[in-house]
Length: 169
Image 1 (cartoon, one colour):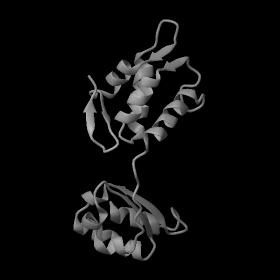
Image 2 (cartoon, rainbow, N blue to C red; image 1 turned 30 degrees about the horizontal axis):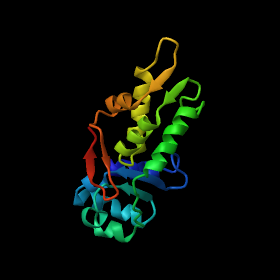
Image 3 (cartoon, rainbow, N blue to C red; image 1 turned 90 degrees about the horizontal axis):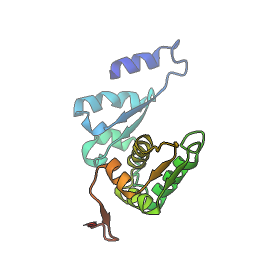
Image 4 (cartoon, rainbow, N blue to C red; image 1 turned 180 degrees about the horizontal axis):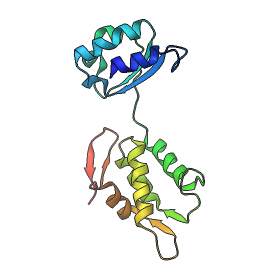
């Protein structure tokens, strides 16, 4: 696949500039030989490499690639960030559910923000499932904590300031 990408990149009809932005998710899953195959193309600028990993790149990614890279550490979103995303998804008429009559309890938002562990996709998927499965006869949607708990399919728990989880009974 790498050889094909490089060949397409170097084809002046397909790519007159001769450079390609290559995104590799979970680059740590590439073995040493696969990572080594990228190196000459990264060095000569044929490929601009963006590699994502959930592992420590200094241990899992080829040291030669790391030495030619800028490493950015991304952090999980805060609960407040997730709450903002939830409210935006519910109010945006163009990209969200703003054109529907939806109400959500503060307790549901709080639970969802906490249980999503900083991942907006978890929150948005739960909101989508809640909207699709909670419509009443008049078309309105009422989302409470129980609905959200069913949609994320996790037990109700919370994290304290030390990061320890506690089950709510």
